Length: 177
Image (cartoon, rainbow, N blue to C red):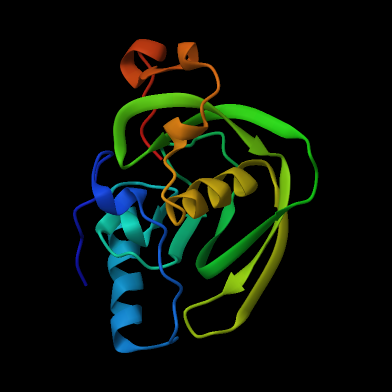
């Protein structure tokens, strides 16, 4: 389909709560998901939320196999998730570095629940229900935050651990989201 422009922090669309998807498996929804997939692949992203390309719907995609931007990350299955509901499975929180395609060139240390359950639907309306931890849990929380108008810098608790990637990690090839 097509590669879409990723909106950047400051765009009002990124600050809104996204609308729920009401109809599954429509030509419009399927085209949106294909465009999101193409855009995520073109940007070497680990995930993408519909609001990041200017569509205020509760649609996220994510997945990591072998990604040069995340050489140490465990594999996360490619998932299309609509109308997600996240439930923490522990109060344990892990801090780790995050970036975002909507916040290019920056990284920050972000606290996230270590384990969670996520439920929702795929693009055809089939239920999804998974319990996950580690990088998988982090990616899901990051992407689903976009549906609530939250960008990762809003979650940072110590701004000494937020800055430009090339300054924080000189000589390393880390990228965004």
